[in-house]
Each structure stands twice: as C-alpha cells, then as structure tokens.
Image 1 (cartoon, rainbow, N blue to C red):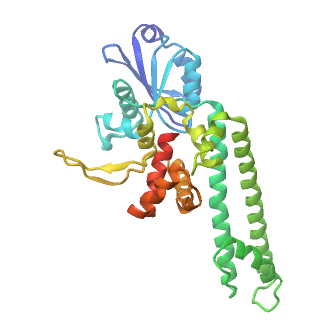
Image 2 (cartoon, rainbow, N blue to C red; image 1 turned 60 degrees about the vertical axis):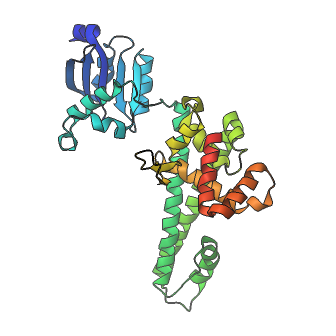
Image 3 (cartoon, rainbow, N blue to C red; image 1 turned 30 degrees about the vertical axis):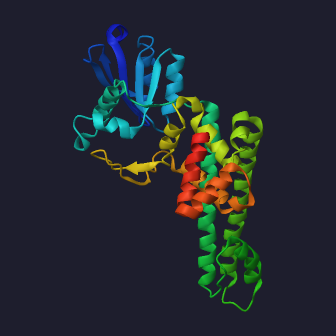
Length: 334
C-alpha cells in the first residue's frame, strides 16, 4: 500500500471527525487509489507516506487548520474548503451523506480550477479568535443572567426598568427591602445570580484587555482602527479572522465575502437587487454594521468627506441603507 501511495496518489480528500478520519485518494487520472477509514493516531503516519506536494483537502471545521498546519510541515499541500462548496460534488446527493461519500466529494471539489479555498490560519490568529469567541459567549451569558434576575424579581412583585444600569442600581435596595414578599432563600438565590453577573463582567473586561493589547502590538490592527466605524474590537476581529487581506483580488470581493453586498436575482440583462446576502461570518458582519450604525448616527458632528457622504445618503435613502452602505465602504477600504 505504501508503494502505491508513493507512486500514484496526487490528491486526497479527507472527512474529519473526532475519533476517525475518512481518506479518499485518487491518482493523476482521477482513479480511486484508496478510500479507507483511519483512526486519529493513524492519520499523520499515513499522510507521511504520501508523495511530496500531494494535495490534501478537507472541509473547514474546528480542527481543519490544526491538521492543515501539520500537513504543511510534512511538505504536503493542505486545502481547506467550505462545506457549502463541497456538498454539490457528492454524487449521491443529500440522501447519500456518509463519511466515504463526503471524502470523495471533497476530493473532487479540490480538483476544480475555480474552487475557492480557505487560507490556513496561524496559531496566533486562532488564539486571538478564541478571545473574541469567549467574549461573545460571556456577553450572551450576561444577557441571560440579567433577564433571569429580572424574571425572579418579578415573581415577587418587584419590577425594574429595562436597562442593566437600572437593574444594577435597584437590586441592592430590592434585596434589603423587608416589605416585599421575598424570603431569605429567595434573597440568597438572587444574590448568587448577581454575583455571577459580576463575574461575567470581570471575564468580559479581561477579554477587552487582551483585545486592546492586540491593537497595541499589531500594526495592522492599529491601522484599521483609524477608520470611522471601525473600533478596536472590529479591527482585531477582522485581522485575526482574515490574516492576509491580499488574498482577495479587490475590495468588492472582500465585501462579498463578508456578505454586505446586495443579493442578485438578475436575468435577461435586467438587474434585480435585494437585501444583503449575509454570507460569511455573522460576527464580523455584525461588528461592521454596529460600528457603521454608530458612525451614521453621529455623522453630523464630523466634517470629513465620508461623514458628509453618509449624511447625504441618509437624507436620500434612509439611515438603515446608509448604515449598510457605510459597512460596505469600510469593508472595501479594509
């Protein structure tokens, strides 16, 4: 088997999983050399037998970049493909989804000359993305914790205005008020929830410190943060997610990758545009839109050219379209 692999295999499609990995290998004529299941500890020794320069393709998943870095160290050519681009090459369609068919589809998709691959992320990029994902998770937990406290107080007839600041100010008085219906156990339970809220605030502050340090240490982040509507969080997230911006041919391709371009249903020479496509990472798009929203709502305070353009667009098309247009422009500038 090692002799066959060393002489003939030019491309391998890999379907990754936690414990087993399916490998589909083909030769230069497209004939199947092998389609086998490997345990996790067998995968790298098996790949070490592949000829140098062999293409090893896999779907973008939680461990894809880890395996891609290891394969590149062996002298192979790792290729990471988005799952939505590999799925159409499964001959059995949606009804025939299994590991072997998925590996074959990935192998076939990697042979297409026009296929778009995901650049392999470095350890530093993924480490910074860990901070951003933690921060978003803590934010969601904090929102849930605040709503939980508000609901528990309402069970005893204590209603607080809808803002975290108002709840934080009213909570100590509600816990100390002896006239409401809360007994000792309820007060202890709500106090424990308030403590969890304070811990989440500390976790988010730690993430913000790491993001701020990333902005001070990285010149690209510092440069991107100078744009109107691009703050330190957005600049850090963009730089860690994209890495080398030169992988895109132009600014419009990057905007399309982020999903802030119009959806098209054009035919017969007639252009029909709709809402934005919302492709790509929703987190990056959310940061762009939120930053643009802040810039649009405060544009009258500034006299630069982009702010004047935003003001004119807001008067002509409305503030929501102006927000998306500014997000698109910022993506192109980035």
